[in-house]
Length: 241
Image 1 (cartoon, rainbow, N blue to C red):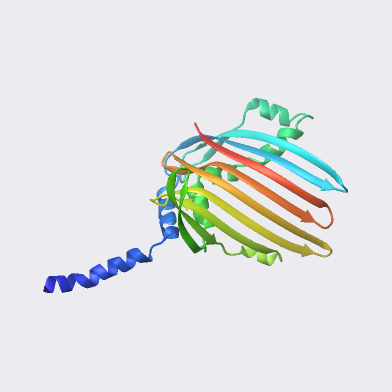
Image 2: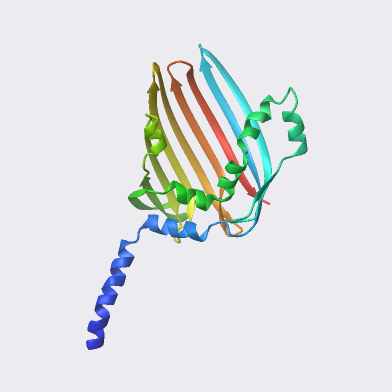
C-alpha cells in the first residue's frame, strides 16, 4: 500500500503532462524530427499568372521556370542547376515569359522549400492554438489545428494592419498533411491606400527523412487607389529526384 501511495503523485504528474499536450505541441515535435539532416536532390518549379487592371485595361502575363537543387542537409550548401536552354531564353529579347519566374528561384527561396520543417517552425513562432478538431481528409483521420499567428513587427513599424491565420491538418504522429494560410493587410501612405488578401494552400509529403511541400498554390488579390486592381496565382512544385 505504501508503494501505491508513493507512485500516486508520479502517476498524477504523468496524466497532467499528457493532458497538457495538444496538437500544436505534436506538430512542433514532428517538425523537429523532420529537419533536413540527410541530402536531397529535387526539382523546384515556379509558375505564376498575373492579372492587372489599370485604366480599365486588363493585362495577363504568365511565367514558368524550374531548377534542380541539391541540398546537402543542415550546415551544408544548397547548389542550384538551371537548364541551359532556359538560361539562353532569358538572355534574349524573347525572355519576358520565363524571366519573371526565374527571378523568384533564388537560393533563399529554394532552400526554404527544401527545408520546409525549419521554415514552418519559424512561421509558427508565437502561434497559439485556437481550436483542434478531428476530421477525415483523403480517406484518413486527421486533426485540424486552427491557429492564430502574431503580427510581424516589421509590418507594425511600416503602419500596415495585418490579420493572419493558419489552418494545418496533421496525422496521428503530428506530421503536417496540408496547410491553409490566409493574410489580410491594409495600409496607407500619403494619398495612396493598399488592400491585399492572400490565401496559400500546401500539400505536404516526406522524402529523405525531411518534410517536403509537394504542392503550394497561392492566390493574391490587391487593390491600390492609384494603380488599379490586380490578382496573382502562383504554383510551386517540389519533386524529389
